[in-house]
Length: 277
Length: 208
Image 1: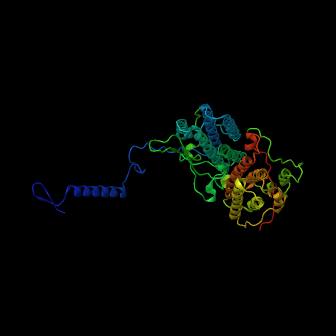
Image 2: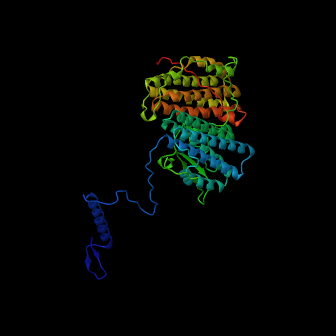
């Protein structure tokens, strides 16, 4: 294409063409550089924007003590959530009794996991899980306390936490080598499964017994668009992630969604970690 | 752990065998060889993936128990159980059938043999259209099934048998909780969450 300048002289290339050619030149140079034998420097994938730097998980060994310390940390995290819930002072007498029972139960499981840790010459973990606290519990509690219906969110939070705790123990029981520890974690998974089912049964009654998804139905939401909880959520015990929707809607009607997952490398309480409490 | 409350299902063998409670109690007596005899020390890191021969013996018994549970729920439905209890029985029957199918699948045998001894002992108790009676006997069955799988879990060697069993027993615990609520069976939260339940001593039957 030929473009004409203001002076009436012909030019073979316009500004757009110059940009295209420039871009192609830079791309070709990058390709040649990447294919060269003498390439040096950082081999990590490039990043765009101002995202915080990625923190690699620590490269510490994972043994039974680490798994049991993680179990303790998770139980104490749940205990802290229930203590906070009791402090909000929104629940009726029956719900307070239920939450007190749950609190007592998680403290007892944490103590049992601590004893098992020491029985295999580990150091019992007596604090909450810092990773869960920072990334899940703290923002979750803020959202619940600022909610348009805190009581609904407290119940949904309790169910979700019991479900993820049960799933965690269900996973741990397969990973632990120590027979006593494995037995204790499946007992905890069973108890916490009962907790989750019991909370839903107490709050929703027969409508909450069985998820319609088991029979091939769809997920049901309440009038505010929040998914209903169910006592029996799956045919087989799931260890997958759990979505929890809580808090007041924003100006677009969107509420916060929290993703709960069983502990992975970044949430384990390694033997090398110092107590955080 | 928190102290255990009184169980809605009395597993005391002194209970009369004709009562519902006695029938559940009698489950504990249905056994021949102890499953523990087949157990071997487990090392998770060195565990085989597929069920071993020892696992298959136990899985066969577990599958028979699951088929029995499914058949018992069907018995209640045939007796006219309806409404919420009927809906629950329908789903729970299908769940137990799914467990039997899955167990048979990983072990490589057919899911076609229920435990007749257990079935006969519980059949009359399940043949009811009364929701409360159904809830009581079914709650006992689910708690017993969960306790049985929990005991078997410690005896399995393979990863697949352990993984599947863990995923079954936690849902059976949930189903027991639902049935407890349906029948209004628990008089305390301890009783609801930590019911007393004894595992069955399963027979070491012949593989089909």
